Length: 115
Image 1 (cartoon, rainbow, N blue to C red):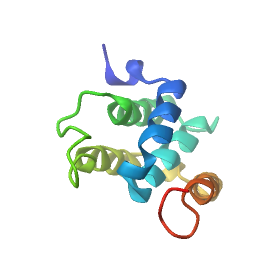
Image 2 (tube, helix red, strand yellow):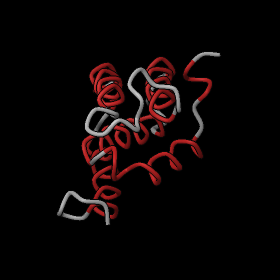
Image 3 (cartoon, one colour):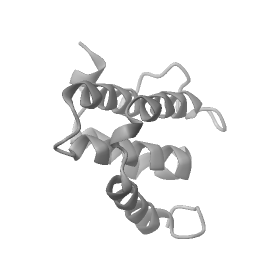
Image 4 (tube, rainbow, N blue to C red):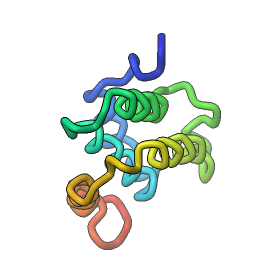
């Protein structure tokens, strides 16, 4: 099964809620930007495929570096998400950044720590 086919909205939100604190603000911000970019109707299919592939890797319990390893568990996820952001960066507009920022503010506030 292709990575993008194993993505689900429910799995994405469940992973974020459960592991946002461990993953950290940077990883969560990148994941949210990708998620909201994929929701845009003008984001082309090739970009959505790249986004959902990266998000599927993020929510997958099978990683190159297990997420449970302290300090390094989300480095591979961060790399995949960053690569996807570079690939589809044109579709990360101000509205996408604002929506991601609003969600980050709800979860992390100004402190950078999960509320």
